[in-house]
Length: 221
Image 1: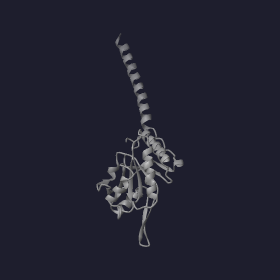
Image 2: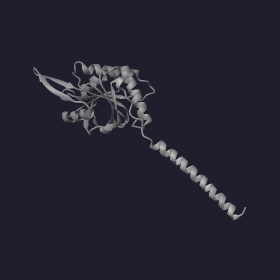
Image 3: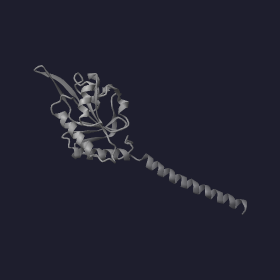
Image 4: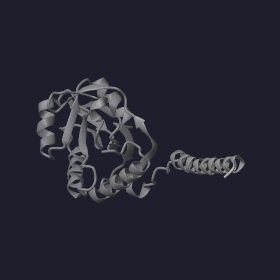
């Protein structure tokens, strides 16, 4: 084989490699750079899912064990968060009972979330009282208490509010009734409005988790 033929074959080989490389690179670019699927529409489940999860405000509070908790403490798992208080006569016990039933219905193949009561009445909700309250519902039920302004700021970043008022000398607490679903990055992923049916909560969580997993939006746990 003379020199010119060898050069021609070498050039053809380089061309084949270049074309193959461009094809592979284009495929990788398309797969890696494609637009993520939009958030699922779960209106029938009273649920709004954010296309881009929202960061929570920075905070330092106490949990039911009296341990310091920050925003970073919420990373690593899914969490259903609820703003309420232990002396609540109606909304909170119903919400917590629905969450306990949701926890029982969840498939073991799904990530097992935590359930978090963010106190709207820190004057009365000491860590000890929160522990007695949350322990009734299960080992993965927890509470947060502390400075009222910090709690109010955290509630706001959960799209919730609470207001204190006095009626005949008694403290009443008006507060939002929705659930906030946090992803394993500690971000607000969805808001679930009442009424809360455990079966619907299970379906909403499963669909949000699968969407987040497929789009790699903080669904690693």
